[in-house]
Image (cartoon, rainbow, N blue to C red; front, top):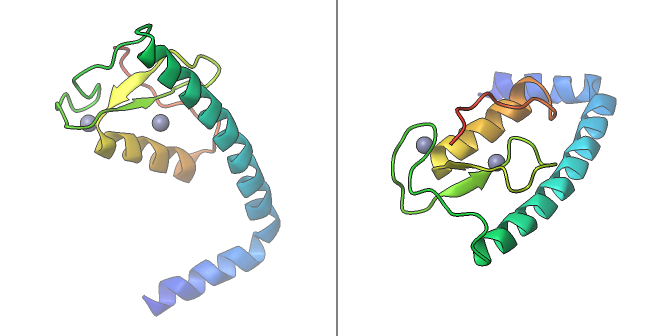
Length: 108
Ligand SMILES: [Zn+2]
Ligand SMILES: [Zn+2]
């Protein structure tokens, strides 16, 4: 545990610049994401988009389903996911490749 924390500190010290840039990029992405989300909420309200009952990845029917945007420039193109799969996609995206990487998903 202590070892990991030390490694992480070292990593941060060495990559400070990249991390700052990464966070900035994340903020930017986050804003775009928020805007797409608002548009989606509106489309749901007026009945332009319907929520699926099933997660597109694990096919479960969770109590709460979340809309994921593979591409934020198409706010109404949404993949419906359970909270677990949704979190997984976002974690994977941040971890490996950067923010522009788009997960490959079956379309609904
Ligand atoms: Zn799922
Ligand atoms: Zn998402």
